[in-house]
Length: 183
Image (cartoon, rainbow, N blue to C red; front, top):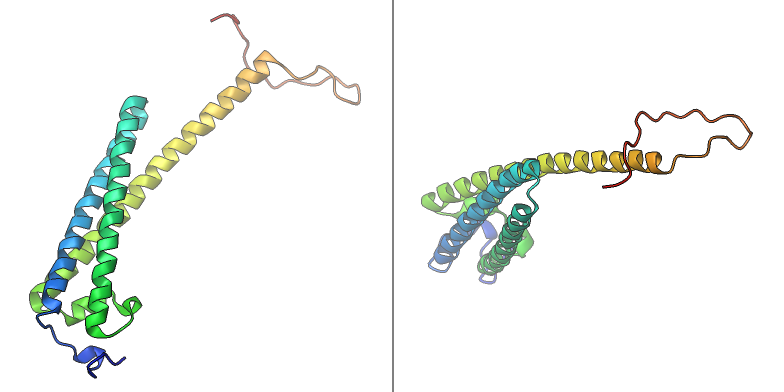
């Protein structure tokens, strides 16, 4: 692509306009890493809370997670604005700007910092996903146990009819009985 002044995208060198934009991008990526670190800690804490079955603490943890999500959303918006500004300097569509593109055009310090940010963010996002999936499995199995318990209690309280539609005796597969119906 050709930019506004006639240079190709690859010819654009680091200039006084790009320098602060790159530094701002690195700062935003670091803050995003901090938010994802906090999110990972909250996912780990959530598992412990789920095992303890402490609903108050779970509500509090969920509020902190929502705050992290809002922070991440705000940082994403800032990052998108920075990408737009960098794209304008390069004279390309913002869809063409990736971290790899930024790395290839930064100075040596910026290249190093962008590589670190990309690596850190990738690892944190992967970790957050794994922790969240682990919690999902725990919640899914808990929900399954609750459903099966409710079905069992319902069978005890209102057993199905004794006879099938064809008049044969229905065989029951219940394994339990109510000792007392009162609380």
